[in-house]
Length: 234
Image 1 (cartoon, rainbow, N blue to C red):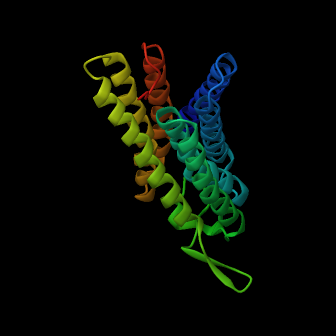
Image 2 (cartoon, helix red, strand yellow):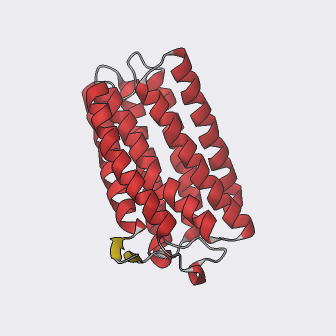
């Protein structure tokens, strides 16, 4: 059942990334380029999940899934939102902060030992695979779960907060734009809910949430981008 959900989610993510690239080519704006990267990473994480569903988890596949799905994806969405709402200066500042967290998180994902006993065909939670800290040389370093919590949690607050604020601003003057922003907020939260279900042992919920999340994001972006004002515009 999971494969019937993960493959469409990966394909939709790729289609969304291609659309954002086309939007950037037609009208070069930083947020479009960043969002194209966000949906490309969404596709990579979902493709890793699809592969694991068919062939089983390996340390390398789990690292790809965790890095792009739990650490990189939502911060890129947040950077794009900041660029769009606040402009280039604050967008670059947000990108700098996010880049530091993502780079440190990537090193943690690559270096931290993976508990292979937890890698079966079912989707394991990050807390099952990674310890809170790991040793590198003589140093005890924070594990990937810390960076996933910081990157995913803070970035989700940024994306949802800006989307909801824009929805409230445009609700009377441009309901189509407002509804699109609400859908963007919902689409950002759905995969996080699926990740929580995985932590409680419902691996199938993650596959469903990834498909529902990307479909809702696409719906919201399409609805808002065809309104008179840009999506999440201030």
